[in-house]
Image (cartoon, rainbow, N blue to C red; front, side, top):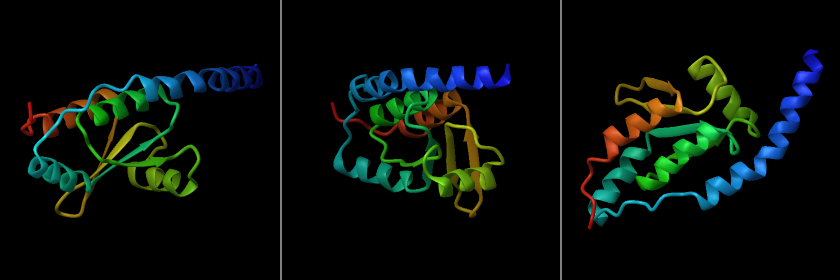
Length: 134
């Protein structure tokens, strides 16, 4: 029974992958516009953030849409196809679960934030208050 379930979900992922890729590409919201100085500040702040994700994960798509909406150039690490990224996620966060946002603090510590809604909330709280150009 276990092998049947494994193949069922593997097949389901194969069928849904093109749908998720299309949703990611064509369903992106319009990004906000900031002044060049404000965007440069946001770009600097994003250098301390890394999103560990799968390309076809619906929860990762949700986070990437929010990143696009907020015009955040956050580094992406694909833990499905990159073993080094997968090992870094397991070593740092303690488990291989996506999406996961790695937040490097000023004291050198790294916070590992799981759950798409928590990540979206963090990004909105930290970056949505940046002044936007009308």
